[in-house]
Image (cartoon, rainbow, N blue to C red; front, side, top):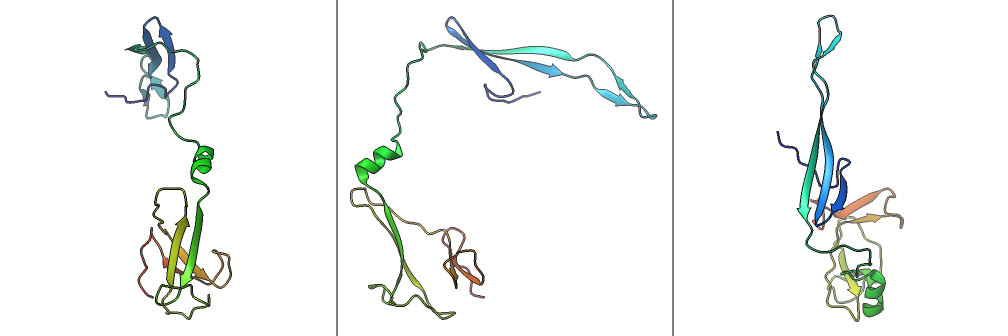
Length: 158
């Protein structure tokens, strides 16, 4: 029988004993229950308790001093790189200027420019997962027309 569980799962307790870290738990084996034809239950045997311990040699002394984080908090990132400014604009047919109208006829091509402005940040790439066109500025309003779906793919025409 193979039982696989993390060292700190299933109620495991940890302790330090000298140069050893010890993780301990109990494996409980319950006897089988047999149902008779009359519906009564017969229990054959008693519950067995097997203590399980994992011993790991300590490599370093552990104390309660705080650790210095290896990650950069978002506040540090903002103070170094500044805020990121995202934009999504509709472009004219030649994609060199912003489209003057935000109204489209069904079947008309839509050219979009998704960008992020980050003056002090290394270059970034913007991905558009989904996009929907609606008559109102609420994305869940009806009718709606999905034109970018499934992490950036374009759905087939109806």
